[in-house]
Length: 472
Image (tube, rainbow, N blue to C red; front, side, top):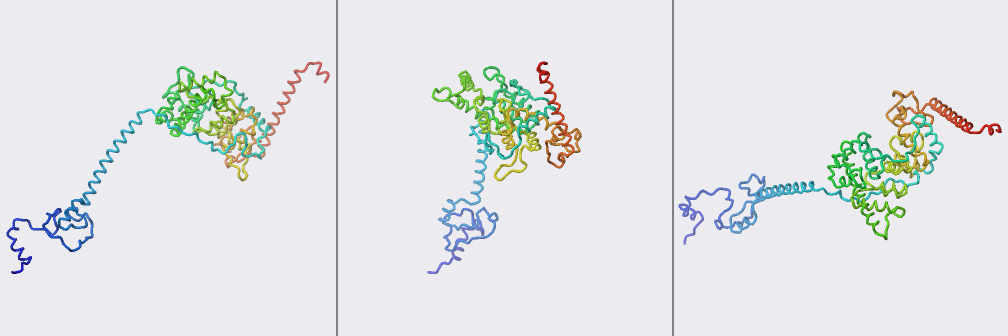
């Protein structure tokens, strides 16, 4: 029998294949199973860009055969897989964005309270009642008395008020209100801005959240409404006062902490077996007032009156955004406790007067507003703290030589300064105090003091009866 070659078999089958299209050099995407025998040669890997190949087949060309067809069906083309994945990912992303937008809308529509915050630690490196510069001997009692005397001649006599004025809804102030909570928030608003701006911010709170019209907290801002409002609403209310984002967050955190503390104190006050801090000396009527406020959600910090001055200041320092200056102002103006609050003007003049050291010893903190407060609060007698705080601020704002922005070429420099002989200014534009100016100021101060002493002696002699004068 003659051997049948592949060529002869192809010729025999040629008539039946004429109706079929000629086979291309590249195989079809899905070859019919069993159309060709499986090649025993290894599959050739081709180099080049995948995108250049037809039908998105990728770098490996499939070999026709049953096993290859099964593999091709189980493993979809690489490029198609990527496209499908991309489309699927895009659809998922769109769905996720829609879901996120819906959730955000729902969250904004709810009035949720500010999340509870653990009170911060007073990390100012200060110890109440102890100076950070214990070996520095200034200011002395005589130095404090002399500065008060000289500045009162220019700026008027300062008298500590016996009563606290009713709260103003137009002016924020720095704690000159009866409510400790009001004083704390008003003083926080006044930080790092002008009085006009802080007052505008406070008016924004009043306009947006209103005041309590009746009950125990009548006349005060509805602080519970501020606590429960979205932070963006509080921000909008105070945005004209400066640093609104930080201050709005601090205010809501303070209110939440105060609210929690009120509820805890209410629980303790209604339990005969326990008393909260300071309650051992609290009259029964005030205990009942505390309980009523807590039940009505009238937020209050008036229980700080029950603590010592140092303990009250330490407690205020645990609230967000409250530093020594703010806490000291609330203690001085609202709680009527002796405390030497140090702002930028007081700090500058304490340096000019030499009441804090120019250089510190090893291990001591640098001189700044907080350490100046801590040092001078220990050194200055209680009876002079209110007057010195007021007078140094007044003098620091108005004196042509002691203001921060003036120099020797400024208008009014020649008018002099009542404490010229006591200060040593720093800064090139200030030029320091000249020897001549210091002598003139000291001579004027001594002359005024001698005149004052003479007037006091004359007054005492006028009160002595005539017969006793004769005996002398």
